[in-house]
Image (cartoon, rainbow, N blue to C red; front, side, top):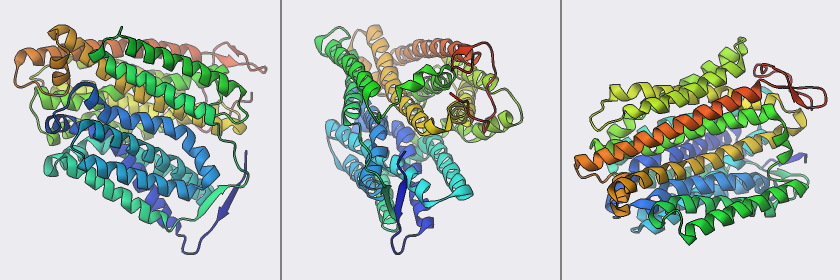
Length: 504
């Protein structure tokens, strides 16, 4: 692994660096979770619905997930401060364009650009902290970074709802643009650093991964309107699958792959990867699409919808510390993650209580269950995954885990939205009607509200079943241990966070 060369600049201030990175992490995470609250207003203002409207949220998550994979390597190659500043510029420009455009396709393009900026901020921000701080200070800095990401995800729907209700969705994007400008100003006071040895960027792997994920998401989002069996959808899915095979072949041969596939052979590590995929499946769809249901069917304001989402997101702030503390006190990590995943599965099953007249109190049990499961998983997944990997590969393992997580989050949003639209279209016999309904345009129609509710019931049952099946897989994989030769065998419980990493 290349060593790091820091080049302190006169006037470099670690405090400003820390504040800039924390602000960046907060606003990037808020953009992931908060924009969904604005979707109904955007749809009405720009006369948009269906796939074009879904891309407002899905596009940001797509580019954020895909470009995070390569931004770390680009930061090492061209300079971490430089990439941090470039990320701030792109984030600012993307949000400024989002606030000014008058066409849904231009807004989608702006959101794609914003996601690239967010990926650069997150990837280079972490690298800058690693070079600027040592020892306990570095530990505290990364703990603060993780906390700010959690805060951003948790408060994003609520703060965005309040902001949109007070000043409108366009001004909300302008606020994000101003924050991006502040991050850019902060980067002026940051010392530049880059790898002392020029890293070899796996361009082939990065490009094939980005294009493959894009094609699959395009097919899933467009399928409800175009038809699942149409040439454009089938062709995009097939091309995405072929490119994914090409990507895997490239990674097996690359000297410095963006995704180390040798980690797949470690069953316990893959168990923790499967756990994080499961929580993404059970949490993200509800986070992104429930505000539209609440605003469209119940007629609540963006502020009220954002406040109601606190029942889902607030536990994400509290539960991680609780989960980590329990594991350090000797509670089985395997038992804890299985419990967390059962919470997620059970919460989605219980979400079938959703109906047009449901109160906040009625929504509390499923939302709190899902949020608590997600929070408990946050508290232990990364630490446990790293504890079963030998120290020399923890960087690769972290990249692998984060890539899977980001890709899963982007795909979950696409699939969840497509499922809702397809079910409503099947019940109404009209894609145009389904697109308007899933965009929150119910218009007081009880029949359309019932169709939307039925789509939520079916999708929630599907998510619950898939989450439960994955939970069984996690339990089975974690019930095995490796012998001295690295083969999985027998039963074993995972070690507490901070335990000695397993030797290969």
